[in-house]
Image (cartoon, rainbow, N blue to C red; front, side, top):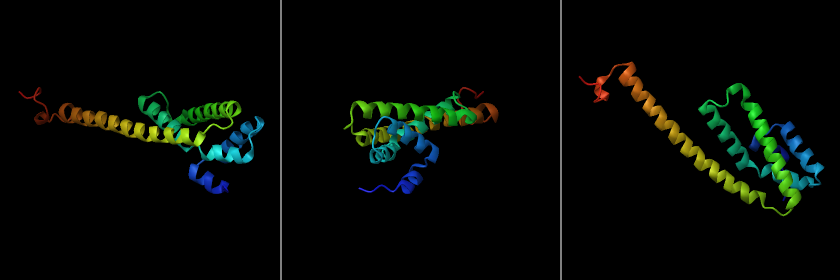
Length: 144
């Protein structure tokens, strides 16, 4: 199977520097270039989960927009180290299969997070209507 690196990078949205870092660290541990490219291409679910976790932390107020890139770089570096160690210890590890499960988890977690945001947002709109605009018709406790 031939891998088109340009297409892979466009699809993943990865900057060339991150790919070079992944390749350099994995190459340092003796991983072949074809395997390195498969690893990078196979981490789509992991990248999605990292992005979702950072977005959740942003929503919770733990991460601000100015530092989100640093959080992402650190999280992706941790993933890189973990993948490198796993491939060094278990060269036949099925990263693609595990990443597919991670991708499915990220999808479900994203939907659950969107539902939570929707519930919180609906409550805030209701409170604004009742308390801010003084629309008493929307609250039995405020009717007099």
